[in-house]
Length: 214
Image (cartoon, rainbow, N blue to C red; front, side):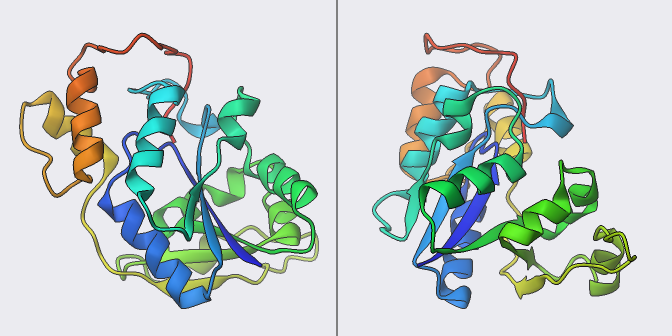
C-alpha cells in the first residue's frame, strides 16, 4: 500500500487540510492518508488553544466518511514532544512492506532542517511538498537539508490548490465572534461552539495546556 503521513496540530482542522489531503491522495495514487495530530510540537511550544483530546476529536470529524482518510492517534498516545522521525519509524514497524510519504506544506519546509533527524526521515519515507504557488522552487530547494557530502536529498513537489484558510484565522474569527461557516466542516463548527473553544474559555472537561500548537 502507498500511505501518506499528514501531521499537524489541527487546532482546529479545516477545509484546507481536507482538500490538501484529498489532492495528494489523488495525485500520488495513495491508498490511505493518515491524519496524525501532534501531542506537542517542539518548534511551537506554548501556542496551544485546544487540548490533544479535543484536536483528535475534531480531526476525526473533519475526515468524515472518506475511507482514504484515516486519523491515527499515535503521537497523542505516545504523548510528550512529537517527532516525525519517531512516528515514521513506528508506523513502518507496525506496518512493514508499505510505501510511505510524508506530506508537508511548502511553508513548513523552511523549518524542516531543524526537525529531529530530517535526513533519517527521508531514508524511511518520501517527502512530498504541497506547493500552492506562493513559494518558488529555488527557495524550497535552499531550505532542504544537506547530507555529509553536501547533497540535498530527493523530494517531490506537488501542485496543490490554493485554499486561503489557516487554523490561526479560524481561532481568531471564533474569538471575535465571527462565523466560521465554510472554513471548517459543519460537524467541526458545532464541536467548537458546543465546547466554547477559542473564546477564552473551554466547556470541555479535558484540559492540558502544556501541549503545543503545530
